[in-house]
Image (tube, rainbow, N blue to C red; front, side):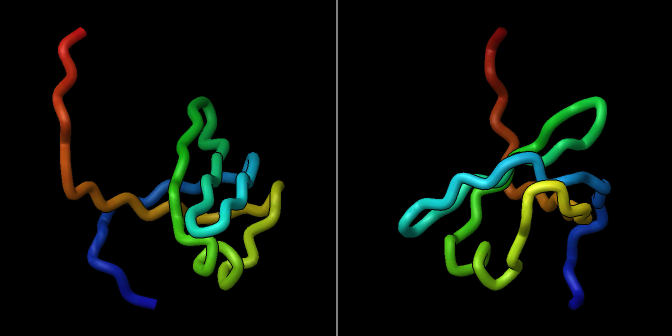
Length: 68
């Protein structure tokens, strides 16, 4: 599979919260965590399981500044 993103990190699936249409996946990317929201159909095609090692490809479309 080809993709246009150049940023990738390795991680491990920490949890999966499956919804009717969208699903939330948390990843352990030591020392941090990352999350991704994907369609449930995509989640089922990927067949991601807790504890599985994955590559997380990051492609940011928006950057939102937030005042601290």
